[in-house]
Length: 342
Image (cartoon, rainbow, N blue to C red):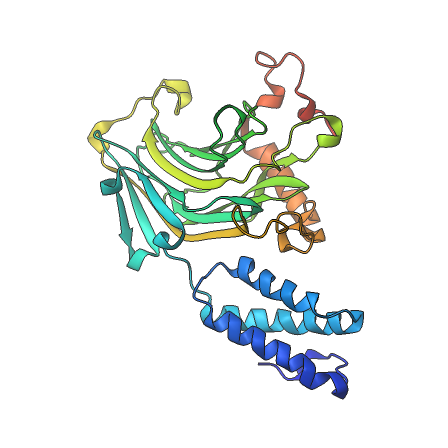
């Protein structure tokens, strides 16, 4: 643990013992907490501490010290969650295999069945992410999906990643979609700029009161802003679960269904690890989702940073192959959320 001199903070002696009590309690809670969802539990501890302190100068000291403690904790106990901690098999459990002691899983698709899994709980706002290694080689006709869904039928909210299989040598396409208050049909497609079957890559969805952002390895590829003030629906009332499936969809997945699945290449495998759900549980405190101190509601997450904005523009200019906003055959009049500048 760093000394007060290394922190370069003005820490009055009258506060030092008081502050270190909080810090050491925080260390104890962090290092001894068996659950591994870093931000969810660290922000809870942080909120508890902050709620007990009313002096602004003390708050600043706590924040600075807490960040150092947090970094320290990550360095000694940052271990990924296991599959069974937060997820359950929803479809064909014999096609989902736990590996690496449950820290990773293998999904299998063959002529008999695909498979799927879902989170045990639902969440309202936050961030979810997984590292995924997609099907290598000839994967045409397959779909590997990672998404959030409110499971409310016609009025559902949903945030989709769908990885569309390809013929060997062709780029992998990822399709994203946003459903808000039951309205979807907002597909965008990009060709990934790397081979997603060669190694694991991180796919994330950030969801707060300001926008939804889809990330690939921290590069934003899709942005859906909250424009409720303009009458555009935004998902903010329904908690959503986290889902994933591997299935056959050769009637549409690859080149609009022209490329069919080659079952001689089966079985097909996709791999997942580093499951991370950081958000407000649906059955948790009712004030969580509206708490402005949740880290995902912070100023740094209310809009894209300058670096993120450049990356986002680069993706759209160089790798986007379909955008519903510009599909005049489907939408002669562009949907309102597609209008420039909103």
